[in-house]
Structures are given as C-alpha cells and as structure tokens.
Image 1 (cartoon, rainbow, N blue to C red):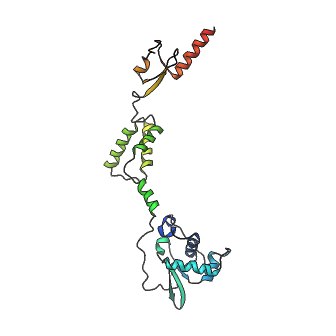
Image 2: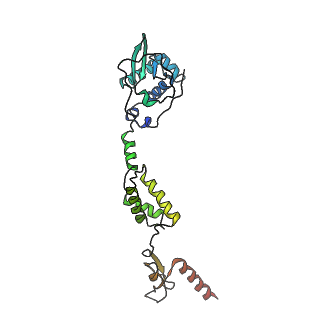
Image 3: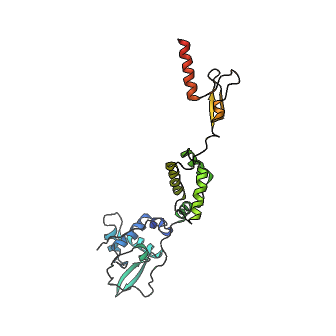
Amino acid sequence: MARKRMIDPKFWADDKMMSLTPRHRLLFIGIWNFSDDGGIHKNSNNMLKAEVFPCDDIIVKEVGKLKDELIELELIIPFQSNGIELFYVKNWKIYQSIQKPIPSKYKLPDDYSSPTVALQPNRIEQNRIEEKRKSTLSKEELSEFQKKYPGIDVNQSYKKFILNMKEKGRVFEDLVAAFEKWLIRDVERGWNPRDKSNDLVTLHCVVCTRPKEVKRGKEERLTFCKQCGEQMLDYNSYLIEKNTRKNNKVE
C-alpha cells in the first residue's frame, strides 16, 4: 500500500541526487512511497513498474535497469528475508522521519546500520549558503544601499550594525537582508541621517544659461554668474525665473 512520504529540499541539491537522471530520481522517490515504514520493498521489477510507472512508456526491463543502477550507487541495498528477494533504502532515516512507524514484517540483514550523516547540499548550494553567512558587506553592496536609502548615512549605520553584531555574538544566515532590516529601522526612527552639506547641486544662470556645480547650503545661495553677475539658481528656480521674465517681456 502506498504511503505519504516527505521530501527534504536538500534532496534536490545533494551531489549524488544531481548526478542521477530524472527517471532515476523518480524511481527512487517512488520507492519511498511503496516501501514499508522500515524502508523495505520487494525486489520485483514488475511491481516497481506497476507502482511507479503505471502509465508511462517504459518497459519492465528498463525499470529493472534503473533499479540496478540505484543498487550500483548503493542507494538501495538488495537482501533476502525468509527466502523473499527484497531491498532496503540506504539512509532511510535521513530521507524519512516517520511518527509511530508500523514495524516491518521483514528482518533487515545483520550488517544494516542506521545512518549518522544528513543530506549535504552540493557545492553550488554550499557556496550560496556561505555567501549569505558572510560577516562583511562589500563596498559595492554598501553603495547600492546608499542609492536605495539616500537619507541615511549608510557607512555610519553599517559600522554600528557590525559593532552590535560583534558585541552580541550574532551570526546572520543572510547578512544583506539583516542589514537592510537595520537600515529600514534607521529610516523609521530618523537615526544616522546623512549630512548633505557636501552634496553638489547644479546651478543655472537665467541670462547666460551656463551651468555650474557648487556645494549645497551657503555656496548654493551666494553663487553669481562671473560673466553677467546674475545670481545662479537651481534648475526649478531657474525655469520659474526664466518663464517669469519671458512673460514680463511680452506684457
């Protein structure tokens, strides 16, 4: 009788699983459904064909070949019990955690041993995990955050974030997400505002229309055009003043 089974997400990222063809993986998972709660199944190609591939265009001989290759990879182990040909799923307790399992009517071989090592992610997935667990952010990442949160001094906020992390001995699974959450808190509470006095602004002369970059603040308010002596304005003020002068000239 078929049983409900779970599939750990790490299954798909395991190196050995990724080396299998889709049909091998389907057969292997299908075996879980039709094995008893001890991971034991009758070693019958006809039965596997009927259970796992009932409507698929695959013959019993091909199913047997897939099963034999799973045996070669030591994913399933053949054995006999009371003269019956069987196999059991190696590392069954890693793949399945069954509450109140029904005892198997078959006796496992004497050399059977319970697994002690869990499924491991492949190298690509492992690198991704390690990348998320990193302890520092790059200059590029901080620069992107500065563009996203222009009102916050990201570098100052980052220094406090790292200090807080070290003081409390915290390690984040995803450092980027953790720091962004920290920045959102700064925005909401008005902490670590960025000093905009060194920001540059482009001013325009109404007469000459020549642009000039200056620092915000006092320099912005007291900059005059060297050519005609007109006070230079930011772009919006420049457009308003230019339009006002145009209308006055028409009148």
